[in-house]
Image 1 (cartoon, rainbow, N blue to C red):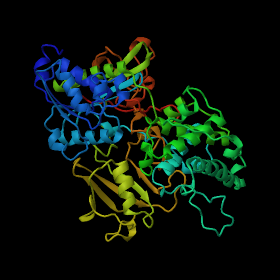
Image 2: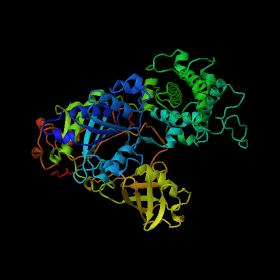
Image 3: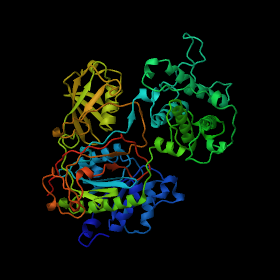
Image 4: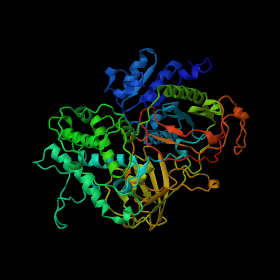
Length: 625
C-alpha cells in the first residue's frame, strides 16, 4: 500500500496498463494492492495453457478467454471497490488514439513486441503522458521511465532487429544448426503446409525430368495416385537428395567448404510405418524429447509427421495451404526438428534434440515468475514518482541474474533525449536507393511501415501528395512517379494516428551489397547513431529474407554513459564527470558492467540476437528538475 503522503495522488490517478501477460498480471495485482482505484487494461490476447505456470490471475477454466477481462475479474475479487476497465483489443486500433491516451496520468507498458512498444511511445509523446516501460527475460529485467522534455523516449536507444540470415546461407551453405531450423521452418514447412505458390529454391528441377526441355514438375504437388507414404518419400528424396546433388554441381561453392552428402529415404529407411495418433513421436515409440535422434529416427519422424499432416479426417487436412509454424503444435515441432536434423546431417552439422530444436524454432527463453513480480513492483514505484512529479528521483532499474558489485537491482538516472532520434528530436533520415529501380510500393511496405513503424502513413513531396494510406500501390519506381523522386528530394512522411512526422532525404546510389543490402534501400538514422566521438556511424545493413523470430520481442543494450549506479546513492553523490569509472566496489557498478536492456513481457518467447559483446559509449544524463 502507498504511504500516507502518496495515497492521495495514487487514489486520484487514472492509469493505463498495456499488456496483461507475464508482467501485466503481477502489475495489475500490485497496482490494486498499492491503492490505485482507476485502471484501464488493453490486451488483445487470450489465455493459453502455457500461461498458467506464471500468470497467476488465470486458471485452467479460463483458457481461451480474454486476458484483460479475466485479469479484471480476478483482481476485483479481492479489491471489489476499485474500477478496472478491460479492453480486449489491439492497442494499435484507431480507437486508442492520442485523445484516448490524454485521459490518463501515466501509461505502464507490459508488451511483448517492439512494434507495439514504439506505437505506444509515440502516442505518449503526442499526448504528453509519462510512460513507464519494462521487460523481462528469464532472471533479467528492467524498468525505464520516459517523460517528454525530461528524459529520452523509448526509441532514443537503438533496438536491434530480429536475427536474420542471408538467403544463400539458408538455402545453399548452412554452417550452424540454426540455419537448418530456419530452412525447415520458414521454407520447407511453409512450402508444404502454407502457400504452395510462394517462391523459394526448394522447387528446383525434379530429377524425374529426363531433359532440360521437359516441363518442370511441381514436386510439391501431390498426385491423385500417391498415398501419404509415397508423397512423403518423394518430398524427402527431393529436398534431402536431389537438391543436395544439384548444389554439389557448383564446384566453386565447395572449394573452401565441406561438401554435403545427399540423403535418400531408400538408403535410410526400408520399412513403412503406420500410426493412428497425431504425434509422430508417440506413434513411433519415441518418448524422450531431450534425446538426440539418429538419422533413421529423424527420417521416420519426418515421414510420419508428414503423413499425419496429410491424413484425411484429421484437423490438419482442412488447413493445409494456410498453416503457419506454431511452437505449441507438437506435430509441427516434430516435423521441423526432423527436417532440420536431416539437413544438418547432410552438411556435417551436429543434430539437436526436439527440446533444443523447439527452443530455437520458437525462440524460447523460459520466463521466471519472480522476475516478473520484482519488475512489476519497480514499475509501481516509478509510477508513483511520476505522479508526484518527483523527477529528481526517477530511476531506470536493471535486474540481473548474478550480483554485480553485490547488487541484483541496479538503478541509474534516466538519460536526456538523443539529438539523433527522429521520433522525439525530429532529426531527418537519409535513404539511399536506386531511384530508377526502387518501387514506391517497396518503400512504403519495407521502410515506412516496417522500419519506421507507421500504421497510417501519408507521404508528401513539398505540397504534392505521393501516397496516402488506402491508395493502391503500383509498381512505379521513384523516378517515374507523376512527381518524380530524384536524388536530393526531401520526403515528408506522417502518421496521423501517431501524430508523428519525419523528413527523409533521398540519395541516389547505383551499387549495393547483394548479400547485406539485397533490398537496395539503406536507411540511416532510423535507429540512433552512436555519438560522433565513438567513431561509429549508424547504418542499416539491409535485411535477409529468412529470419528466426517469434513474436517480435527483443533484447537490446542501450548505450549509456559510464555513470556509476547504486541502489542507495543520492543524485548529488553521483559524479558529474561520467568519463571516470570508479573501481571501488562500494561505489556501485559502472555502466560497462550494466546488463543489456530486455524488452519482453515475461512470456516465453524471445528473438535470438547476434553473438558478441555490447559496446557501451558515452551519453549525457538528463537534467531533471
